Length: 291
Ligand SMILES: Nc1ncnc2c1ncn2[C@@H]1O[C@H](COP(=O)(O)OP(=O)(O)O)[C@@H](O)[C@H]1O
Ligand SMILES: [Mg+2]
Image 1 (cartoon, protein in one colour):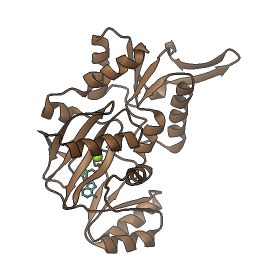
Image 2: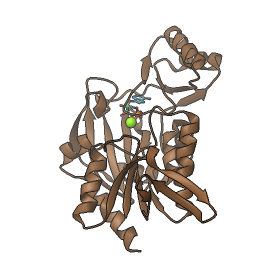
Image 3: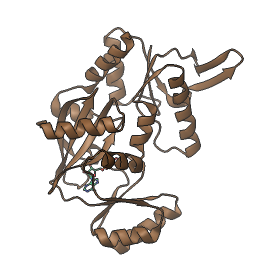
Image 4: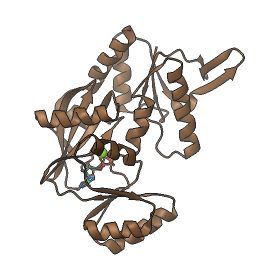
């Protein structure tokens, strides 16, 4: 049996695509909110339990660990999945990689360390360091250290405005993730990589500097080049991901990777390219299931 796990009580579109693709191939599949996965430890052993009894999944597709989630809850969810991994369940993406890509600091470090071009970035809890950075960088982007879909990402040209926001962020326990604004055309590039292979890419064209589909960008299929392929595959591998959505900007000095998404939404990608990533992903799942 294959389980799909996420936070939402109802599956989002990629989860549904995966669900139906697995079903189509005659394999057992179940969608489960992560809140309903319990661990029971007794004299008889360790069981991953659901309301309907023990979960006998051999593969778990993790589509999310939660969005508005406190540290204790996140730790509980991560530990639950790690215990499953220790008992031999294959998690896709692997839990460690899910956490790495969720953390914009550790992931940008790893990308940089692998020789992948990334925007100049400063991450700090020191307001005065942040202020100095805002003055030096000029146009800066402030991002939530965990976040997606462009939510909460802000652009500042005035260091004084940035200062006031940074101060407020720190008071509310949000470390500062500051990035030099990379001048780019009115678009970025999203490459979907599955099992080491880029399956396609699209431009995300927008009137906003934030080119997320969730921010109103429109997806248009683009041509994969060897350079794009190399960057996207390397970035995915660096974070240990089996599949990903890589966000790439076209700067004056060449490509820069903004981030690597471990649970990419692919509604825009499906529309733009006519490709359904779920078919490629389930090809991989089927391969694993046979082992
Ligand atoms: N440093 C930057 N310079 C220019 N544009 C940026 C920068 N960082 C992010 N963006 C734009 O904002 C979008 C969202 O940023 P990203 O880092 O991918 O975070 P999210 O997790 O919210 O998608 C990117 O796709 C890109 O268009
Ligand atoms: Mg992004």
